[in-house]
Every structure is written in C-alpha cells, then in structure tokens.
Image (cartoon, rainbow over all chains, first blue to last red; front, side, top):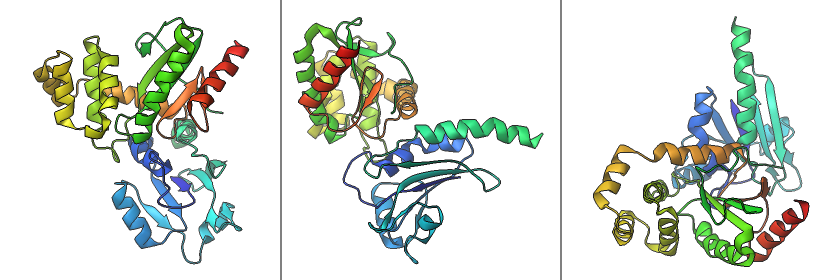
Length: 129
Length: 176
C-alpha cells in the first residue's frame, strides 16, 4: 500500500504529483501495490478533482477531524493547516517499510516509491517460503 | 538530488554533436503548454552554446490529462523512424495550439511521409513501447512533471528560463 499525503487538490501546475502517480499507476500495480492519495480536502472537492484529472485511484478525505490521519503519521503542518508531501509504503503486515517527506513545494516524483517496492518484493517472497 | 538513471545512448534523439561536452536533456509532453514554452527557450540555449551542447529529448506524455500527448509522441517517433524526428518535434511544438489527429496527419504529409504509414503505426501501437520506455526511464530518474530538464546527469530543479539553464550548464562545464 502506498499512502501519499499531499497539501491540497487543484495545485496549479500540469503534471502535478497526483497526475504523475496516475500515469505511473500501472507500475505500482505490477508490484501488487495499491495507491491512496490523502489530503485535508473534503469528499466533494476530491470528487471534482479526481474527475477533472481522471484519477484512477482513490483519494481519502482527512477532513474531520481535520488532519487527524496526517497527525498520526507525523505529517501534519499545524501552522499551515494541511499535510506535508509525505510518502509511506506500507507492507502486507501493516508495517511502514519506507517513508519520505519532501519539501512542501517540491513534487517528490515516483522514483523513491518504486525503489521501495523493488526492495519489498524479494523480501515478501522470502517470507512466504 | 535526483539523477539520470538511464544514460544517453545513440538510440536517443540527440540534436547537435553527439560528443559535445555539455548535455541538456528534456523529458517533455507535446501537449503540455509549459513544454511548448520551453521549446523556444531550448532553441535559445542551443544557440548560446552552439557546438558545445547536445540536446536530448525523451517522451514523458501525461496521457490522462493530455489526450493527444501519446499520439503526438508516437507520431514524432514515426517520423524519427524515417530520419525526421526533429523536424516533426519542432512542427508539433510550433503548432501546439492546434494539436490533434488532423494536425498530426497534416504535418506527416508536410514532411513528405506516408499518412497511411502513420495510421498503421498508430493502430498497431508500433511506437508505444518506445514512448513507454522513455516515460519509465523518466519516472526512475525522478521526473516529477513536464518539462523536467537534466543538466548532465543532474535533475535541474527550479525555474528553467534561458538564464537559469545557461547558468546551470556553465556551472556544469566548470566541473567537467
């Protein structure tokens, strides 16, 4: 499972973080990973954003109580009222296998996530044997 | 700092001297308006450095927000298979405001290529793997939007106006 916290819907650049992940989604799926985007935006805002950007993965609304999920991951910016650009890769046992917190203005890309998934794959196979 | 994970090879689209001391590489999307603006800036950078610079273009179509980006990329690759990659690349960006199938077929004819050949290639997805390979090499290298530039092997973060790219390339040259 990939949990991607981001500050807000409707960031004004093309190829923003969620648009990028939308394109890379098949690669995540090849690794057996599901992607969830999460921000403090509400459900209807997410719905409009997902429709506009044709997102093919779910967005979670960390809306009420505001930012509670982000806080529990240590990824909330209290002074700003939104979350960090923080990425978590969570393994089958529910353990955080990898995380990364990007400067809030910098789209972290997808290379770190894919490397983390690469690393998880052999380990997951080993533990099955 | 993100670095280029897939080195430049002769299979890449390279403009300028392949052995030039400086390399500017762009991951771009033909439908992205920012890439359209970057097109003119790259031309100026090339003029500035002349023979000292080679420019490499790799496809990074954001197909879900740009419905024509993939087709445009495959059309440029189709032209490339006939030795006319850069001609098509330039024409698409110069006519970006009219991007769509009619434009791509008109440009194909303008370059003296066979429109039926393009139709067949698009239908068969002949150049889809090539475009996907470019895209994935970008993802692995930390491309996070379009355009993303690499100066040598280093991702160029921040603004990419003429002076920014020239400064980054000059700094790179000082290192070499």
